[in-house]
Length: 88
Image (cartoon, rainbow, N blue to C red; front, side, top):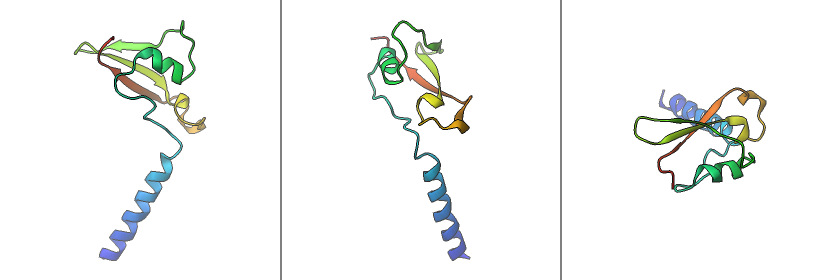
């Protein structure tokens, strides 16, 4: 029984790793601003980002995951969120 559990665990870890291998979710480091996010995902500086204020004084920027991942059509319509705490 332990052998089957171990094999299924290894297979599931491999499949999970395979699913996220094309996406780079950590495209920014701490301390970067929203303008840096625009540069990374190639949005013009004049274009506004979809940002919402949260209850703690920060801003959440919502961008399509297709901008982060390597044009994976399965991610069309799914959004990613980045939280900016300070406006410095």
